[in-house]
Length: 324
Image 1 (cartoon, rainbow, N blue to C red):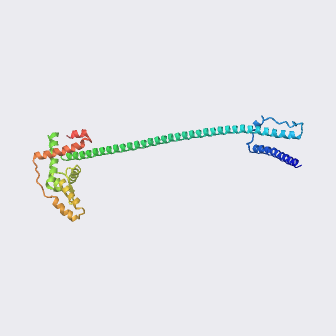
Image 2: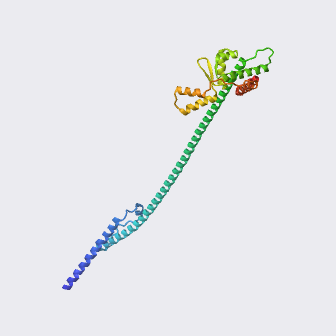
Image 3: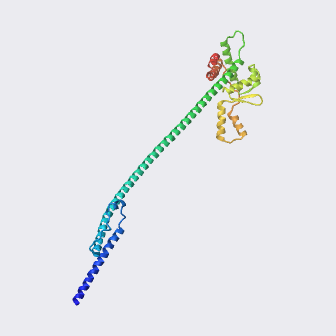
């Protein structure tokens, strides 16, 4: 009895283990199928369908075992399909990665091209700026040269005008101081005029302080003509001095004027009385005896005439040659 009972207990344990295995294996495959990625519909088309009407005629126990085996086969087939699907997904991932690399390469090419365009535009802008600077510099140079030419032309015209004016003043002198003796030819008249001009200048320098009426009487001229001639000689630089309100011309040499100017520059601010006192010391108003022999008079006249002729040469060469 006891042996029968132990055999029955063993059979029950074995049956329970079989039942437990039969229950755990399907659950294991179901869990694996659930955790696997979804199958590709295209791949599932190739999976053969299990016939539902295939039933074992030997009984329910055989039918149950066959169903478990079929389920195991289906799970294995699903594993193969999952592996194929994973391989396809890996290929897709590789292709996507390649596409991403291509996109990155294209983006880098675009960046390089954009940078090259920017550099070219910068060089072009720099060239334009340089050209603009050069054009502006050329315009300034041309304007400066034109201004310099205008200045030189104005100076030339002024020199010509001054020379012409001096020549006109000298011609007035020659017209005023003439020799009216009959039978006197042109050469003799010119020589006499030059001698009278030299005597006129020497008379002023000799007497230092000249009463204009006395000067007019000495040379048989009108007082107004003497004033005009004295002012003309001052303008031409032959004599220097001042005409006071009492009708006197005070001759002051260039050396005396320079001495007064040096005194003022050294002293700076100075009163009128002090300047007058110093001027009386520096400027000699006493009459000087100047050699009046014929040779010296002719030399003075020649020097005056030559200076006036040279100054007037640029203004009117033909007229100057006629005067000579």
